[in-house]
Image (cartoon, rainbow, N blue to C red):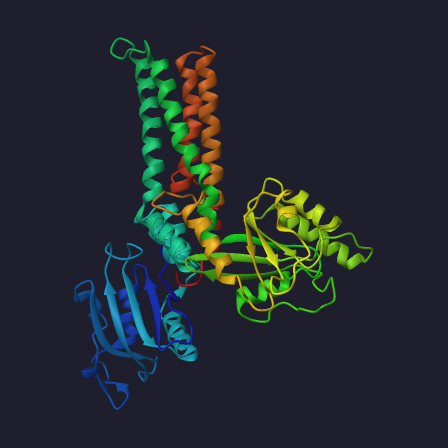
Length: 470
């Protein structure tokens, strides 16, 4: 299947220009059969037997050609520019031809059907990038970065994807894999040729080296949550008791009336999720049902969901109604916030406060922002606080290499476990040939990241999640 010539739409539908990418051994022939330059076309049709279908074979790579796409009867379908990229200097390392046509969906579909008729087949999702991987132009981590680049929602996600596409993650991992491989090779050589390779003191040196490798990998694991938030957004949960102003805050952050707001307590009974960008940060906002004891079955389910979302939150905005004293609902919420990160929003600052701030601060040591959901006063302070918290505080986005894939994290975790097992083996005084088992396990697990030890099923699964034409 990898030797078939494939074609797919490589641009978004509905734009002024539509790009159709063709890749494979027969790309030059197929496109040559349906393309002609202007001097060979007269009265909107191809002159009989005048067009050289080997046109693209005779042209240099990385050249652009103006002409027309023709139907099987020789009539003009569209006026196009064709970009020629010959193997191996192309995205897939195969012969690639890209047709820049006008962007009408019907027109693009018609050109695709003509290409199919001449021997191409429709590309599967991610098949162009899969061929780039299989042909050795990029590794699996770089291939995954392509989709992260396309789906990035902010500058940090984009920066992380670019670093991964450049091979920063792969090089970091490959350096450790090479160290593991060198140690395995030395042990094998020493066991086969003890006269020339000395294992005296090797265990102590290996023990130190493995500790260094574990620390390097652990650094990636420790920063995984930072990388995930950098790539996917910060899971931000708005919590409070009924009628505290949670939905009003949601609407203000979104700058639209997304959540229903009334004076009736318990209006929000389900979870409302939206994405909002604050500067270079993306917040995955969750508006929850007011947490309190209730006999209403539906509302009770909403409260349970709110408590579940709290457990998985990266950041929590606790909206407090300053016009009412703390009650059992507040006490319950505060108990759920123990050990978590967030900020208190002291709401309804536009009216006289009944609640004393010190009463609240005695119970939860979070920073507090005075806020009015009615006037919007304090919203800018909240946005600034969140930005400073994530950009300048403990969760910082800098030049650090981040793992942003759960698949990568699991592979590194398994490798670390194997290296710890090796330390135990050394401590137990086992023979050196026992070391190879754990070293090989760590080597294989890390190889899953760049794809060197990935199974065909895993590779296929990854590329099925790609968009068409990429």
